[in-house]
Image 1 (cartoon, rainbow, N blue to C red):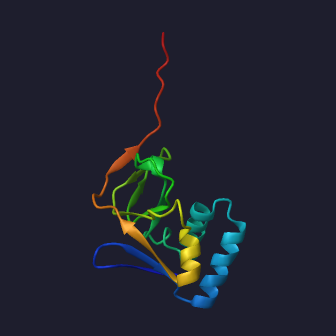
Image 2 (image 1 turned 135 degrees about the horizontal axis):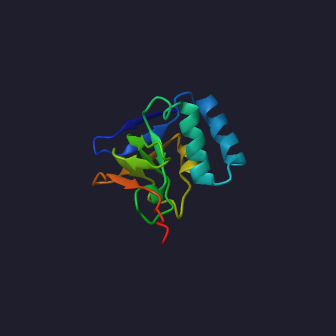
Length: 133
């Protein structure tokens, strides 16, 4: 797999080695518990992008949005307490309710994630409950 950004800032994920990438994608689509989020996680690991600090999967609750869309960022800070701060550009797949990004990637060999126009800096930390005396 490979990724690139378009002049408008949108992110394109496409096949780099079509036969191997398609086989990985098909295997992931068959075994993933969640077709979009599970497959996105598998693609990221397969490509080695999180380990190389390039792209990270973002959960909606980590940036305070109400969506179930698969999302990515190019910069996430991981805190010692297990929380995350998304400080980079965010991309999402807005058609997630009517189309699977994985199926689009399989059929077309590429898929476009839309750039979120305003970069968010969000840190979601667990609430702390204070004991009453």
